[in-house]
Amino acid sequence: MREHSAERSLALAIGLCGLVVLALASVVMSRDNEAKSRESNFVRSTMAAFYHAVVSAEKSQRAYILTEDLDYRDDYYEAIKQIGEIRLALTRLSNTRSVIATDIDKLFRLTEERNSQLDSVIAAYDSLGFDAAVAAIRSNETKNTSSRIFLLIRTMVEQEGLALIQYQRR
Image 1 (cartoon, rainbow, N blue to C red):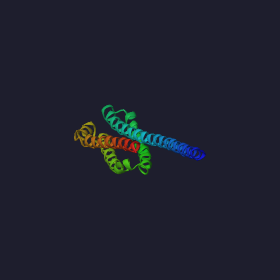
Image 2 (tube, one colour):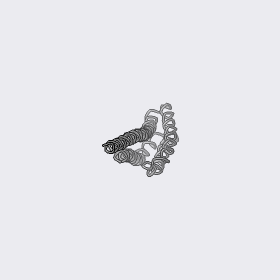
Image 3 (tube, rainbow, N blue to C red):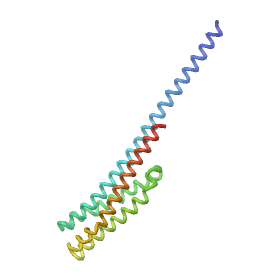
Image 4 (cartoon, helix red, strand yellow):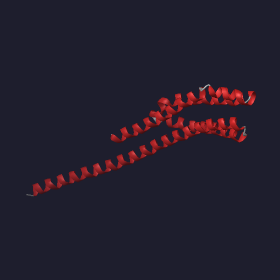
């Protein structure tokens, strides 16, 4: 009878140890999921900030051309500065986030192309006047590049979200 009691005690102890291990594993997984969620949210919010800076640069450039108000030109250069700062943050993130690393160089290349196009329109306006700037805008070159940037940002944000979902399912 004591043997059964000892066996039961041992089985109970092993069972309790198993439950403790499962509980600890659950806590660790929960913390890991929370950390991954925070990282993913940071990536997506940084991408959103990049998008808004890109839009701000274009709006400010157009407002300057339409109004001749130098404050808008200053806003344009401030937006370009923000793009550069956010670009640094995205570069750091791409070192640890393979999802965005795949497309980050393409995003930066398109953004540089677009910023150059915006600068060219401002230069045309400053040196040749309103009609030259409008002609450059009507070429849709900047619009097409901006559309490619916005599509790429949306794709990168979606991929980041999908990567988080896949990670959480593990």
